[in-house]
Length: 325
Ligand code: TXD
Image (cartoon, rainbow, N blue to C red; front, side, top):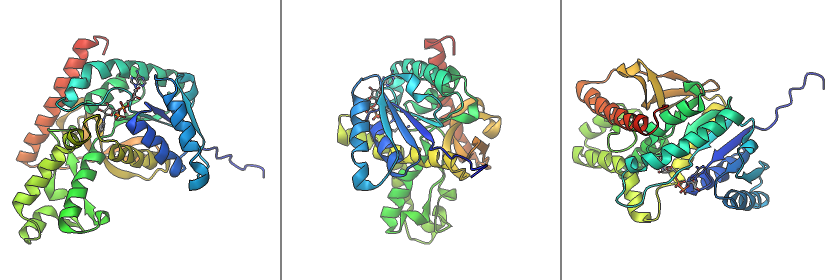
């Protein structure tokens, strides 16, 4: 019919076809968020995983197509690009130990995105996350509101899981609020985290959970990545990180306006200028549309500033390694 808008399927490019990349490909296809292009420098891996997931379609009933490649031209026109390219941690390594290797990877990925998918919404996952997403935005030259980092959704998912498990309630009725950098300096806000709308601080007052147990859960959330690295020994978490990035991509693709903790470039909000750090953000068709700025009390501000300081230290390290940043 005349005027029928051809709603072609979206195109989701996944840069990095490893543990998280493969899981992202499966989740994207299962949810039919769009057609998948899975990219990696290790030729064969992206093609093999794409073909294997495509062959699961008949059993699962999805019609997204999947293509594996080691050529950036295949990501041409992608609507969303999710970046996991780089190396993960091994036991005993900190996220920061990955900086030098992964910074070089971000430079390559940034160039590929700038050339073939300049209009994409880019979600960075590669660690050390806050510094890598900052570098990726610089290397790619895309607008800052279209390049954000996934960490807060994972950290808050871990927090929600531990709270729900402890209280014996559905994860659907637990909401977590985390701020700051990804990792040890993460700032979970217990007064804004709720069970059925009840702040955790009141849950403690009501005697439903002890203060000690809550503090233990906060610390276990902070150590969430290291706990899994210690268990797996060969790599880091990948199911929850992938699911977290998919939630962010979905909010962009469906213009859901979700308020999700994400690493975004702050331009004055929370007293920070230019640095990428985890804060609540409205994610819609415009990308990172608005930073939600809450009033922090003095201890929260101190913890947040410490987190920002840690990120700025990593960014300084990046500038020393790559002077053009
Ligand atoms: O919350 C978060 N942001 C973190 C992020 C949660 C978990 C893991 N975090 C980090 O994601 C982790 O520390 C890594 O830096 C990335 C990816 O983790 P993943 O577990 O997927 O690592 P893999 O399985 O090693 O996959 C990385 C892939 C691998 O297939 C490499 O061949 C590929 O990246 N790779 C590259 N692809 C493209 N271009 C280059 N240069 C490149 N170098 C390696």
